[in-house]
Image (cartoon, rainbow, N blue to C red; front, side, top):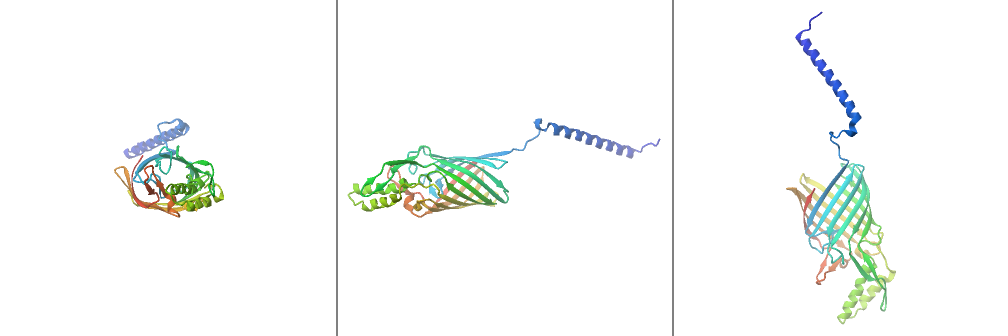
Length: 321
């Protein structure tokens, strides 16, 4: 029998140890494969994400028009997304009771949809969204004909339902929204034509001639009572990182209101967001160019009138979680 040298014995020990390790690893692997569903000790990859944001703004605008009577507003946004592409959003925000008469001073937006594609390249998606204004409504005459034939009042609310299509590429996102509810944010003949009759009453009370106002009302109601279902909206949004903690925000939007062109607008905003100390600080210039600016004026209970589409500097402070 040949006696092994010390170097040979060391090599055998290393080989035996390697074989034992391989055998143990193979057994452990098989056991893990057989019991994977029941092994609670292994970390699991989350199949969904959830995040939220609380934001305070010096003015809370939607499509360039103030929802808060040019005053500060607050909103809470919750987002959820599943690995399958399903997504949902719930947003609670404050609004003024001046443009949204009779309401609770709040709005609720709910979205459910799906998004696919490559986040580093092209993305696409579709959703249905609904906007509620709890308790907010208004009444206005349902018809008018000269000389003074005023129809019964009709009650309307501001709730709106949208179908949404989305296409994105890296930092740029385009959305198309189609209104499928009866009205878009309450826009109908009552909202558009009723002010003519209000103006006529004011003129009469002041001893003036209301003829022009009444003629305007008759012309506005001339096609019967119209709603704004079928309104189309287009949004282009850019969020470009200037550096790791700062990004450029830009938006351009078009609003084409069916049957009521005076409410058509082009809205815009341009600003920056900077993250520091766990907060997001923002500053932007935002407003709207309206076909008829008179459609975006509101008067509060104290008699103060403000233009809600005015371009202004808006400051924001947000906390994400």
